[in-house]
Image (cartoon, rainbow, N blue to C red; front, top):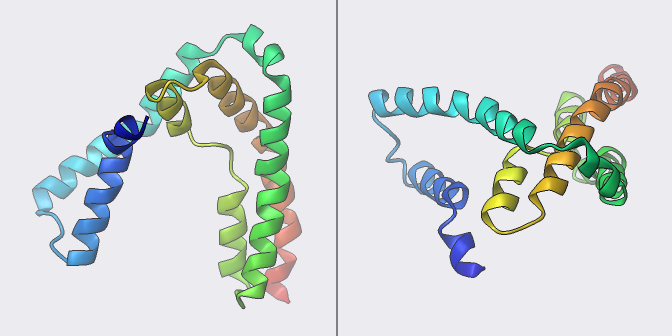
Length: 152
């Protein structure tokens, strides 16, 4: 397991990006443009992988996991982000952005990681799919509750 985690392309990419950023080395313009184009394809490809792995029957068998993770994702994380943000002195648009970031559905890369690391990839596909559908309702509600903070 630790070897799989250390050799995971997502972890390696984050470490390389952090190193390039902190050292100030950066990337050449052509390499930056190439990686930008590749990065733009990553989300659609991950969503296609999730969609291909989704079996509607798995949603029913994973309903407890889906419910638990959805309550955490759409209720506890945004409330915790709001409270911590206010405690740290964030206000206005800054705290709204932090809360919205914490209120979005689980990233499709979670499916890729579950698949690579031997996790429950079918359940993860179900969680991502259901949370994406739930977010169509919860994100506008969350935003409407936060917008009055801009005028305060």
